[in-house]
Length: 172
Image (cartoon, rainbow, N blue to C red; front, side, top):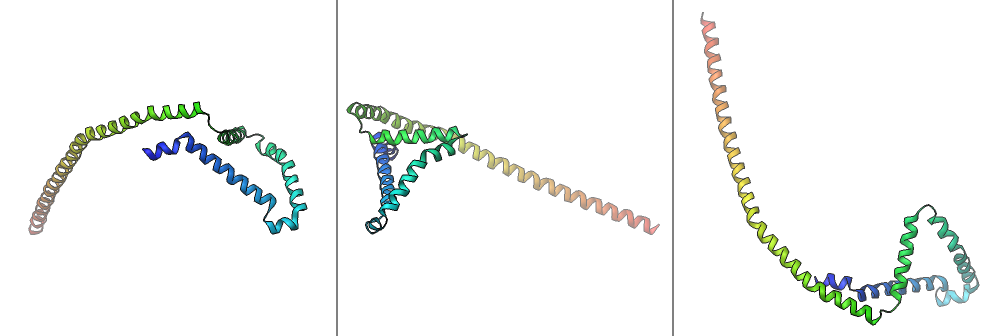
């Protein structure tokens, strides 16, 4: 439960988002600026390419987003999330997060206790159901065996009757 609590803690979420933004900016910087050796060779072409990419980005985004409002909403949400994660949390937000965590902790224990109780309460009926299925299967097997034996005796009797009937007509 603690791992889940840590995973959804606002400060942990904010740290992850800041790290994502940082790594994205580092990757963007490396793509735009290149390595130190590439920088001396291609400053002019990199700047030109970056400028072209930046100026074409709005047109490309509008072109791809047209007719797909869900994608636009998701992109806007993602941008808002990144921007929000870059803004440091205020003391009130930290206090609110701590209060929520404090209130949620007893609920997590209550839920765990309730789950254990439910499992305990279901164990008896489950065992009874298993026993019932076993009994039913045993009864069914016995019934099939008895009916098979009776059917075999009927076939044997019918075969003897047929044999006697055939012998009786053959001797006459």
